[in-house]
Length: 63
Image (cartoon, rainbow, N blue to C red):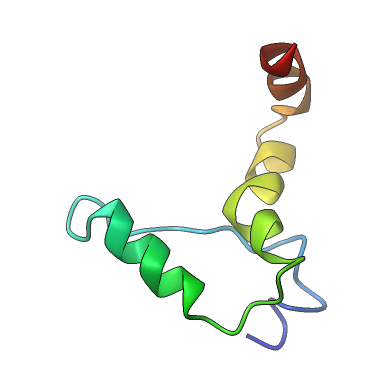
């Protein structure tokens, strides 16, 4: 958790055990982790967008 909140905050991606664990359960479990509020969106979304090169796709979809 220490590194996910600091040095590796732009490198960590969220992963799940779906379909073994339903999304509502893993989201609830993630909320209980000691992750800083400013790091949560990085792990849940922004790091994957950057890694997969979806920046332009999300900007276009938002327009």
